[in-house]
Amino acid sequence: MPIPEIPEKLFFRIGEVCQIAGVEAYVLRFWETEFPFLAPPKAKSGHRVYRKKDVELVLRIKDLLYTRGFTIAGARKQLSKARSPQGPERDKVLIQVRKELRDILTLLRRKT
Image (cartoon, rainbow, N blue to C red; front, side):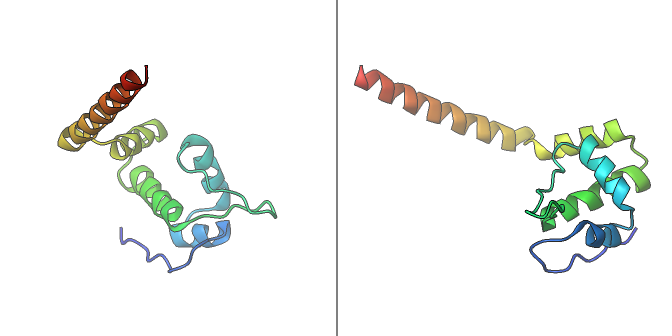
């Protein structure tokens, strides 16, 4: 499936996202309830305002569901795995967090 080109804009309305992704608006609204990380903010007028990263996520969800045949739960799990660091990257993050916690503990011990 060819990846549609996303125009260089800051914000997109739901109709524009529907056109880019090739799905109906009710499908996007349903996906918002099923995928917690797809939560476009609403403008003062109450309309959903999608950013480029939201549009990319919509396209990724569509690929997982329609092309690769995942269920909603399977797609949610795939996206969650992709969002959390794995392997060596995760180890680097954990090492950095431990170091910062030790530094905080050292500072707290000095003050008492």
